[in-house]
Length: 221
Image 1 (tube, rainbow, N blue to C red):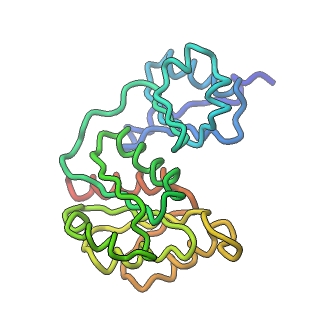
Image 2: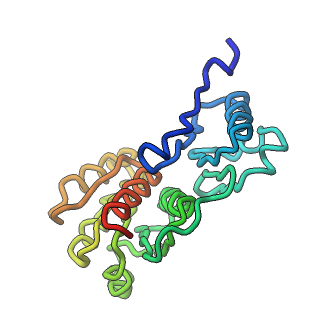
């Protein structure tokens, strides 16, 4: 079967919900990715690619590699120009540790693709709580805070008790033994005593950014 029959881009999604189609690249062959980018080029469409491994990026046709703004840490790429800046308000993206950065950077890159300013604050996990407390004033100025953490994922709960912002927790698959690939972090965030904490799926930085975009749109920022 030709790859053409497997591909049908949703080019009107942005008009319907305000979010472009994102291409989830994990599991896709080079042939599929090249064909998707061919179609996007013909339609003059911009695309956000997520979970694009370095090996997949290197396997693309040279013309497509040259056209992509690729970030290896977050495994994201922009095809076409990102959206123009849409707000002056910054979303804050926090990480408990530097091991969580690939997931937090996926959120950051998604927000920047949509023209939203982002402040990244890394390595402020609760094992050294003073590092987070030094940044409280910055957190309280943000309309939305995305808290990315693995292991026991306590960061999101603590942040929820320090700021009135919308808090979006992202559990990561970082951690030893009983962390079980992020399930402990997910359950900890879901069981949080910080009222109103919103929780994404494990390692879903992209989803967290999209939730932040919906919030910003709803409050008119």
